[in-house]
Image (cartoon, rainbow, N blue to C red; front, side, top):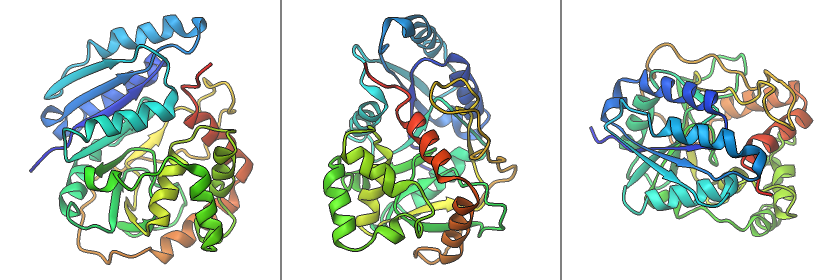
Length: 300
C-alpha cells in the first residue's frame, strides 16, 4: 500500500506538539510515513523562546521513515503556512496527510487516511478524507460523506487541491448567488457563513473556511469516520482569545474504522446530526474558538 507523507504545522506550543507527535508515532504506519514539519517564525519578540523550543524539538523527532524540518524565516501565519506548505508538498507527491500541532490522533488515524486516499484516489467527486467528527452523541454511520471539506486532521490529493480558491469574497458571492447559504451553514445552525463573511471582509485569515467553501461550491464530498480519529487539545486555556472549552472534545476511536463501499452522496442523517449538535451549542462559542484556532499563528 502506498503511504502518503504527513505534513505537520507547528508554531510555539512545544508540549502540544510533543503530544501530537507521540500520538502519530503510536500508529503502525508511522515508521512507513515521511514526516515534513513546517515551523513558522515568531510573530514577535515575546514568542521567540517558545518558537525556538519547538524548533529544537522538531529536529529531535524520530521514528518515522524520514523527518524533514522546514524553518520559515518570516512569520507566515497559519493560513499562509498551510496553503503554501500543502501546495509545496503536492508538487512532489500525489497525496498528503495534513495535521496541526494542537491535534492528537487515534492509533488508527494513519490507516484510515491512507485507506481512504487509496480507495478514492480516482473518484473525482471525493475531495478529501477527514479524521475528526463532532461529538454529536448520535450513532453515526461507520463512514459517511458530507459536501465540502474540513480542517482537523485531513488528507487530499494533488488533483483535488486544485479546487482550492483563496478568494473568500468570490466564494461568498457565489454561495449567495446560487442560494446555497442555508445548506452551507447547516440550516443556520453553524458558524460557517459568518466566518466566510468575516474572512472576505478581512476580519479573519482562515484558510479552512475557504477550503470548505471551495469544495462545497464545486459539489465535492469529504469522507468522515463515524467515530472521531482526532481530537483538538488547543482549547485548554493556553490560547489567548478562546476560553477553555470542551465543546469540540471527542473520544478517540479505539478500533480501526474500515472503509467499505458506500454511496458517494451527501449523508442526510449525518448532516441532521451535525445540525442538532450545532443547535445545542452556542454558535458564538464555535465561531470564537474556530477564529482562535485558525489564527493561532497570527502575524503582527
